[in-house]
Amino acid sequence: MPRSVHVPGLHHGKAPIPVASVAGPLLVSSRIFGLDPDSGRVPPDPAEQVRLLFANVDRVLAAAGGERADVVRMSVTVAHGDHRPLLDDAWTAAFPDPDHRPARHVEVSDALRAPLAVAAEITAFLEGARR
Figure (cartoon, rainbow, N blue to C red):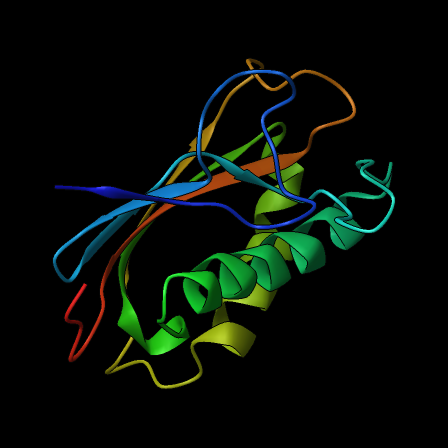
């Protein structure tokens, strides 16, 4: 049976949605945003949102007993194509070894409501998981 993963400071407003769900070693997330978990706000700067996005991905993984190396796929939505270089820079910093990077899909969409510039969903295989 899947179990919900909750991370203090990360939320989907009032919607009753966990930040992720884990079944066995498989973790699948809901959308993760570049939200500042301390203030509960999304900063207006897209570069800061990207930085927070990767920090929040790490927080979700840690809450589930995983780590960044467990990510096998990341699906990212950016509000504007000019945000893509910000994502690429953070991506190569987060996953420096080109032979050990997860799969990734990036979609440019105006569906993100301002001030959101970036959102992601992850799929991870939690090594050694007995959950």
